[in-house]
Length: 197
Image (cartoon, helix red, strand yellow):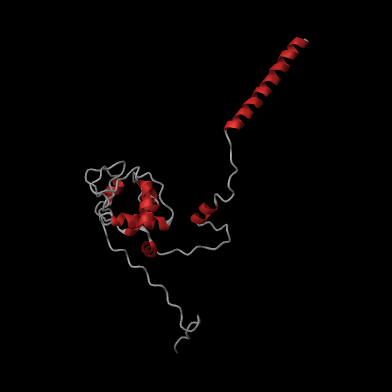
């Protein structure tokens, strides 16, 4: 190999390296990356009920208590997740999903003319009560296999309760289920009374 061939190869390699470096510098001027927040997944772990943070298991709050604590305003905000597929006004049209006005207490396949899945039609005579809505909104395909609803669900129980209470204000106005009574503390300072003989 003569020196002219060697110079051409070396020039091509050095030119390629220089070209890549220049492109990298210009790309760095236009695109900025940010450091990942190390706390970004802490909330997701807590919501998922992970035990990595100390092994304490959160006490499950009864659904009736969540409904009693629910906020209609928060529920209305949560309903924005649903507006791509559903309408909420009285007499509103169907979209990908049916209109949800007066859904609480209505039959599962409540909207005339809507093409419900076979799974939903099988439950057509059953009403949407608070518990049914809660389970369905949490995981539509897990609770009703065969449903056409592709929504992943809302995992946060309080957000679901807020949404359901909001839906209840839209023409249904069903009475909320009674919250269970809180257990009474023993009168003798926490000690159990001796058994009667």
